Length: 143
Ligand code: DQA
Image 1 (tube, helix red, strand yellow):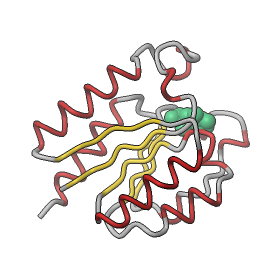
Image 2: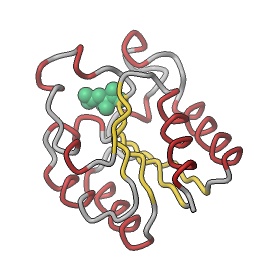
Image 3: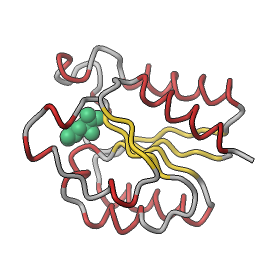
C-alpha cells in the first residue's frame, strides 16, 4: 500500500515550535519515524510538508489519482480550508486526519474540523506517536 503522510503549515518547525504543545521531536525526526515505521510494516511511505495551501491541494489530487492512502495533518487549514476538504474528498483510499495535540483541549476555534466528516478516522492528541499508530492501522487494512 502506498501512503502519503502530508503535513500542512508550520509543521516543518516541529521541535522549535511551541514545544510545550507539540513536543521536542523535530520534523526530521518525524520523517524518520514515519519512514522506519513504514518499512517495518511493509508500506511504501512518503512524507511531505508545505506552508502553501495549493501545494497540499496538488498532493491530494496526486493521491486521489494514484489511489494512495493519506495521513493528513493539515495544521490550521483543518479548521477552515474548504479547498483542502474538497481535494481530500476525492480520495478513494483511507484518509486519516491527524493532530499531534488534543485540539479539543485547546482554543474553541480548533474544535471544528472541515475534514473529520470525510475522514476514515482520526488520531488526535497522541503526539508524534500518532503517525506510527495511523500507519499501523493502514498496514492492517492493506491487501
Ligand atoms: C495541529 C493542530 C492545529 O490546530 C494547528 O493549527 C496545527 C497543528 C496538531 O497537529 O495538533 O498546526 O494540527
